[in-house]
Image 1 (tube, rainbow, N blue to C red):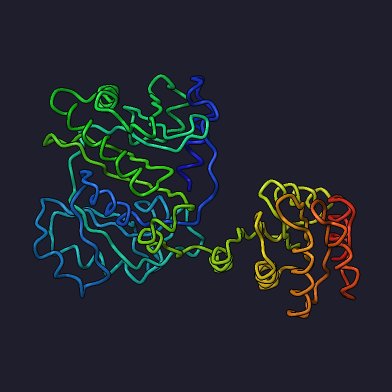
Image 2 (image 1 turned 60 degrees about the vertical axis):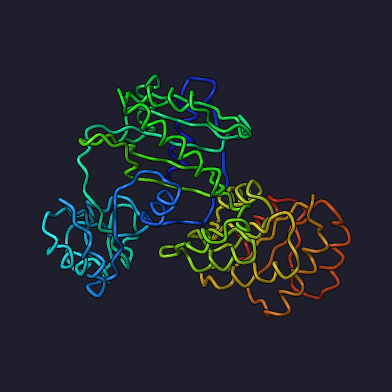
Amino acid sequence: MAAFASLSKVCTRLAKPTLHRCFRVPTRNLNLLEYQSKKLLEESGVAIQNFRILEGKQDANVLEDFNVNEYVVKAQILAGGRGKGHFDNGFKGGVHITKDRAEVIPLVEKMVGHKLITKQTPKDGILVKKVMVADSINIMRETYVSIVMDRQHNGPVLIASPDGGMDIEAVAEETPDRIKTLPIDITAGISRQQAVEVARFLEFKGPLVEKAADEIAKLYGLFTKVDAVQIEINPLAETDDGRVISVDAKLNFDDNAQFRQKDIFAMEVHEDTDPKEIEASKYNLNYIAMEGNIGCLVNGAGLAMATMDIIKLNGGSPANFLDVGGNVKEDQVLKAFQILTSDENVKAILVNVFGGIVNCATIANGIVNASKTMNLQVPLIVRLEGTNVQAAKQILRQSGLKIQSAIDLDEAAKKAVQSI
């Protein structure tokens, strides 16, 4: 999701109105490894490097028909900076290049089963389970292409720059004229004229213009086929043998399309994800762990952030961000409480719900049932407002449970901090 953050900053930095605040997207937990993204590109006819996947020396046979001039051996984890990283066994670098096929398996064995530590991993690193062995290509020039779903244009926007292989945010800040944005009609798709226009802006010359245009059209085809909200290719490279190749790809998907993209969502990797986040997602809950001791149960991301801010202003520290959403049911409230209390750092729970779509009585019944089912031992502070709030408050009063009610969020935060 780092790519979304980077492109969001691009949108706010550029002076061109077509990119100003161009999009905001919700966080999605679906993460794909590099080789998984490459497979999706390959299936849509996008030109990529040939590659093989190994999990150890037992897979050496997959290299028998893989004869290339130079091999790139890359550890597969969900983190950047792999080339400059190091393993817990002392081996340096998660990316190696060799011309000798006999050296590939020893390199793989030094990676698989060991944790790779980079600037973007936890301090203990991430366990490497797979290694990609790819054909090394000679890149003559690097360009940048991405397609993102843009709320301002109510559809996809293509962003391109001839300055590939760089941080696109830096390009936008220093040389905004080197970035082109092109809104695409979602019903008509990208036209040949538009694809050629982008290829020329990317400074491809001669026959490479048509080749680059073909790749751009295929990338847009993939974008719509897999219900993507972003495809970022950095770099889209020109090689010394006259090819146009997508060397590195980041893909993000519309989580509302999961029912249509079951095969893709089944590929999800959880290697560095908090197990509580995984469990929450199964119940359509959004959970992010923090470092404090006050568990927060809210409905809506904006309300979650406001709740955490006010806890901090009152001298406390939130233990999490847990958003139950707008269509929460009683069983989801129970699961939310179970997730909150599974964090041993949680010493109090603050429920802050504004009932618009949500019926406050549903939340109240969920709170009572969860408290009784779990024999809740930590202080519970509840602030409810909105739809059916009076009935909800009566449910809480009649429960006989030690629930502290609050009139507003500031009072709720103060009570939560004081309870600890």
